[in-house]
Length: 111
Image (cartoon, rainbow, N blue to C red; front, top):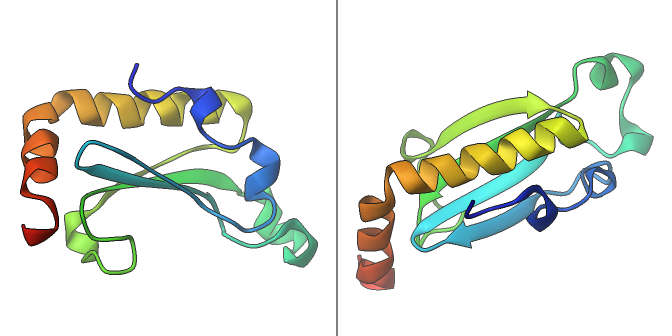
């Protein structure tokens, strides 16, 4: 597996309303809690339907500079099992489109 659950931050990190960013070759990814609100500021209603959401997009642009139509995303349970599934999904996305991600990496910042 390219990305493992242990490579992603502990669930407690996402409770601070922070995201985790990573990359594999030309594939960029972001993992955050949905909603992305710190525990101390979240309402009970917001905490009832909390999930982990993963975004994947081609580099070299960062999350904010990448058009949303170039991204794919998927939600997972906000649990250790969900985090494992998220890591497996990230790895599968890389493996399924490995040639594309390698080509993206080779182009680099000049695209």
